[in-house]
Image (tube, rainbow, N blue to C red; front, side, top):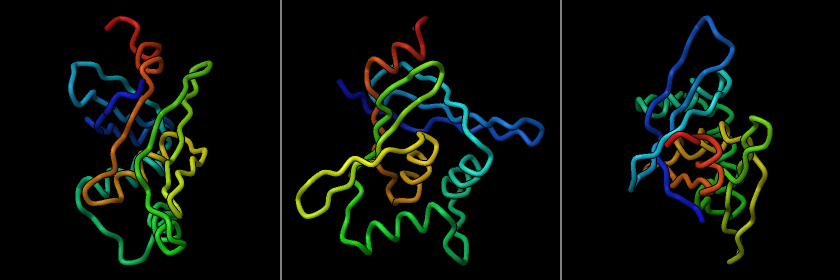
Length: 135
């Protein structure tokens, strides 16, 4: 079962290689962190704060390519957690079909943040349980 989550917090550290995004359950109390890279963290943070660059950056480019090719991004889904590595897909509607594109969760979340309103983020129930066993 998929659970609707939202971006709750972004922690950017200039001294660490790994940054953190926290996802929180929309209709519940569960949350969990995902370690991401600095590029994705700053891309998400920029959009959350409303900063739009004068020229498209990577996630803007991805969004624009999908739209120009006739696709509509529906949502992003974090599908799996294997040996401390999360897996995700970006779900795109194209000519009436849903296409699932493999993605790192950080890129999927960054792409979701580039839409207004932000795209829905879903996480498989098993992933939430594995990521936060004490909740």
